[in-house]
Length: 287
Image (cartoon, rainbow, N blue to C red; front, side):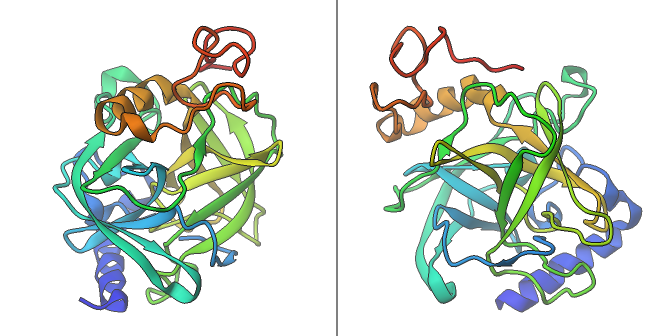
């Protein structure tokens, strides 16, 4: 199926859902109903580690955090078998298309007793059948200590116009900011009347910050309002650092970017294993 037809089918599926699109996708949602677009942004020829996850006619955005592991949303992996991760370069050139061998949602995703906020555990990984040659993006493992107004960069493959079903499938980038912070989620705000935010198709994509000149993933797009005009909720990466480390050690232990002494407290490092980088003891996961 061509890219335009693929996204048209997805848009029709969303219209069939109706008002339910305002809410977080149900626990058993698959990729075909997991679409969240970048609104108010522009085409992004960079960020090659951010790619398109597809399976069964649908897809989500995702980011390489090791050569063989893609970070995405739990609702993009829950109940999904196989799939592909496509990496794009400038002018939409396909740099690589790698088969997904396993999709893993957070074990507490969809378990309502775990949290009153359904986005708290909307985080997952896709394990690739072979490693990508693209440099992964670092994760924010220490507490973000966010404040309202902290700049965020979103990258994803969703719609760029909520009323145009053909405005998707191309990687876009947009600037936004943090509106509020909870124990396990971030809320990104936008300007009323001039929205700049992710939306249908950007689910699973990264929220990026630049700290000390280094780009880090601080959140994963979970859900937002139907018209992509007000705010979006993201699962915090630092709050799930332990679970992500567990998955990396299980599926791609050699892919950890950690290098003690480089000044960055990376996934796999803490105050015991690398006090030089992780000042203050073990990796903080809360606020």
